[in-house]
Image 1 (tube, rainbow, N blue to C red):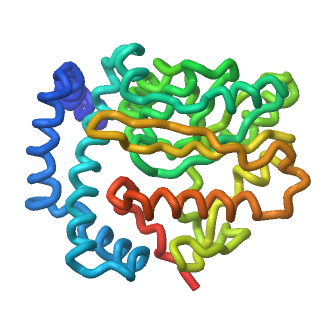
Image 2 (image 1 turned 180 degrees about the vertical axis):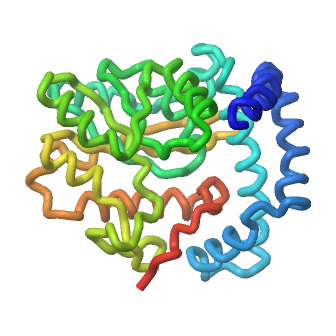
Length: 289
């Protein structure tokens, strides 16, 4: 059944990916009506999250952000599909890295890199960073239950010289690469909520104390990796800018959880600057003190 579903959906996705960008965003406007007005996809969760994270805003102001967010959500969903057939030249034009020499200087230290980022703006196209990096890139992700679509996602990401690994595969991969002295950059989207039972650290995020992922920091400490933050900014529809900020070049000397807390502060800054580009559909504040 899963294979039949894949056979039905794949040709549709491929046809969508072939659309020129003006038509792609016209389709996105239509999808917005279906998702927001008809299906009302996770609207209750989005409203609750916005109320928790942005209590200083009025209901009217949060409603404006809500609508902008759903427009953006539809855009990045179709941009992800577009990635199936997009050229290297096109994506490098639409996702530009600013001051990338900061990252290149870190590579000269010949230490692997833990890259921390948020589900903000275009976290999918950020993987194009691997076109510019001399290190092998790994993206840590949650495996898709349908094996055929999971394979499709792997195929798409491989276009950017990136390897997808699940959370369970992360530590064994890092151990193997460390033993073989394979310099790598590992992408951690560390802003979502871990299981409460597996939380080692609680910190304030948007003013609420919540459990947070600490894996990126702890692995960087154990395997002597540099730690950076990737900030993505949406310039206009279909265009993004990424910038690298160094969090630590000596992670082992930083007190435990300080890097994680620093990362959360940077994500907060992104959200306050333009909250409509954060992924509000996830239940980030389901566990709180």
